[in-house]
Picture (cartoon, rainbow, N blue to C red):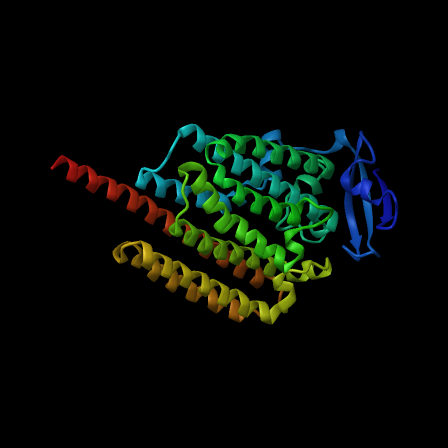
Length: 366
């Protein structure tokens, strides 16, 4: 039978057990938590020998630890900017493209792992197992290892950015701005972008306009208003996705004293917030498309998004409680709506690129 150890947050051993540094041969798995993320917090740990923990393959652990499904937040902007510069024939060097892309992927992996580290120390993964990585919670890897790996990824990102910085020095300002936001949000103490409305907005800026402009400069050496506009619209959609996730976890994150925008507005207020945020994002999308793309190309996306939005709004308005299966179904509907946007936009990008390339080839042939 495994040993059970109960510790309060004031105990000098408390953080050692959470971080997994109390022993080299055992893991401390949280099994019960009270007063999470407060000074009165008490956690009971099951002390399990490392060899008794059933682990998946290293690849599965790695993919779970870096939250590979959330890489859509940065892969889509990279996809958009890359095809925009391919269409404009503005790419400068394939090795710089490779270096920049790898640097951003490593940086985002560092952000995701650091975020999970904070979720574990703050207790969010102990009261909400639905949206957190199981890598730490199930003892596959210690929180301390996740913290160290996040620094390794951050350092790797910096090394990949050096060639880009040497070729395009003007990217330094964007890198400095991003570094300040990342350090303030995730790499100081127990801070987390989830625990502050300003932090959430900082995340939207990071994966929105800063990411788009930074990648554009790093692969083409230029900044355009079109890429900036795209980044702003995408950042709004990412924040919608974040608000939706926080809405599903409203009860548990309130218990953990998480100071998110959704928690600030409460259940009824957040229902209105999410609806209006979605339509504001769609409006931004339509304005951006109207200014940059032929109407015949994006009008179909506008009709489909508007129609599908009706279903989501009806479901969220019917919610009577922040718990239960109806809440989960509404969250899934919102995620599907977000994924539909990405699918429609990706299809439009590919259609625009290949059709314009076809006509250019046809005209040159004439």
